[in-house]
Length: 173
Image (cartoon, rainbow, N blue to C red; front, side, top):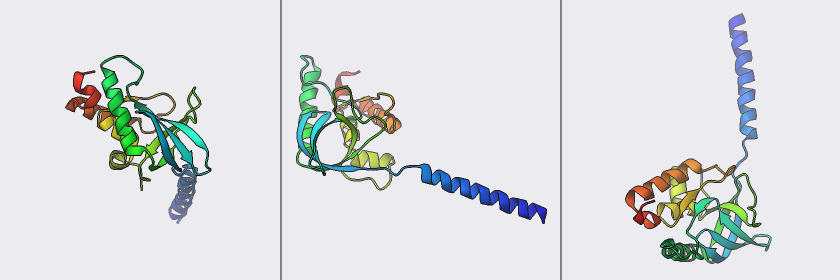
């Protein structure tokens, strides 16, 4: 009888602890925004629901710079054109990681074309614009601490693009 009572007490405390753990995990929050301008392959200007205009830099992504005079300039133009074609005038969903802004005052966000039901590899591949850029070779990964939430997915996608020689990877690393 003591054994059964002890097991009941242990089970009760474990279930309370696990329930508390669930409450601590914050649900993913998205800010709906309309893309009003594309600055380059990894930066956009959006209008938030509160009508505020903000520049947004994509987390985990580094597209070639438009201002450089190198072979990557061609890819910079392609990345810009791709981002513009995919996002301009579109409603997107912005997700914050740890950092809110970069040193230039831009919001740092993951950009989702649709809200994911649950964040997993398939959802990242089909709904995350950050992932689209990397998978299609328009950008490389750029992981800056502490914004590592989707690091493993983005690095995996970069490895796939590298192996197939897609976009910026067509001339090697």
